[in-house]
Length: 231
Image 1 (cartoon, helix red, strand yellow):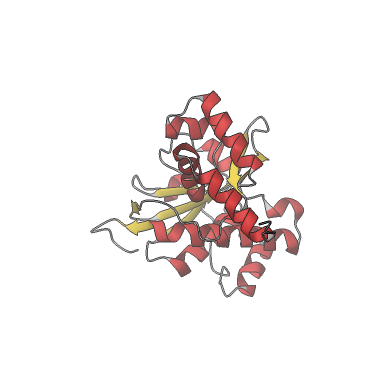
Image 2: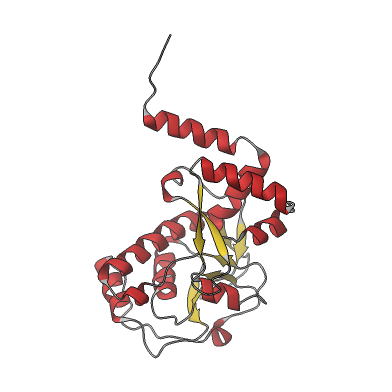
């Protein structure tokens, strides 16, 4: 009997086939938390470079992952999950942290929006900082937040050295910050393009949507450290 399956069913079957191997599922589990370069994935998962390349190629062919060029070190590429495959996928395991700190270069847009979004989704405290903080939060970040019920009007920028504590879970929301924070162990990386480079409302809306999706995905996996103060 010949059956014509819908494109949705075919797509889901392709996804399940791609994830039906432990190494590839481990890659996807790691990318659910944040983006990573191939070398970072290989180091975390203990996979040889040739084996990792094989699995990544299959995931790319299945439309599960995609690559982006770093906005900082242009020699680097990062792997991220394609938004269309994220529905229904949740991070495996659990992360404990007393606080989550979102870091970008200028602490004027992405990290501020991410921290505000986090506070709305999680009982784990959040803060934000920059590696080269600007003098103020970007006006379009304030406007974008306001459109979505987030108030950034009274927020201030801060340097990462003045904010980070030893046990914080650090989420670098830009490539430059990720590459400058090599000394911070266990950090996550979200490769969110800098909306200030374009300086348009659309660019800030895209960044907000990307951050909101990532926060919604990570928040259920992060639980407060027992005994930590909720400041």
